[in-house]
Image: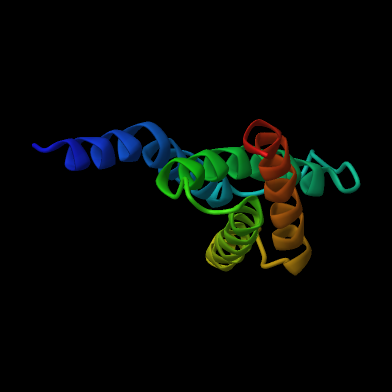
Length: 126
C-alpha cells in the first residue's frame, strides 16, 4: 500500500467513520417513537441543536482533513449544505416512524446546531 492510499485509509477511519457512526446514531434516535411524558415546550429543538452540534464538529474535522487546501468559507458552505440535507433526510425518515412527523423547523434547528458545531471547530482551524 503506497503512502497516498495509507493516508486516505487513515483519514477515512479516523475522521469519516466517526461521522458515519454518529449519523447512524441520529438515524437510530429518529426511529424511536416520541415519549408523551416529555411535554416540555421546544425541548425537541434544543435536542436537535445539541445532536447536530456534535454532527457539525465531526463533519468539520472530516472535511478539514480531507480537503486541507480549501478556505474556511468553503468548509462552512459544505458543512451547512450537508447538514441541512442530512437533517431533511432525517425528517423524511421520521414520516415512516409511528408518532413522528416531518418538521422543517427541526431540520432548521439541525442546520443551526451543525453551524454552531462548525464554528466551534472553526476556532481551531480559522
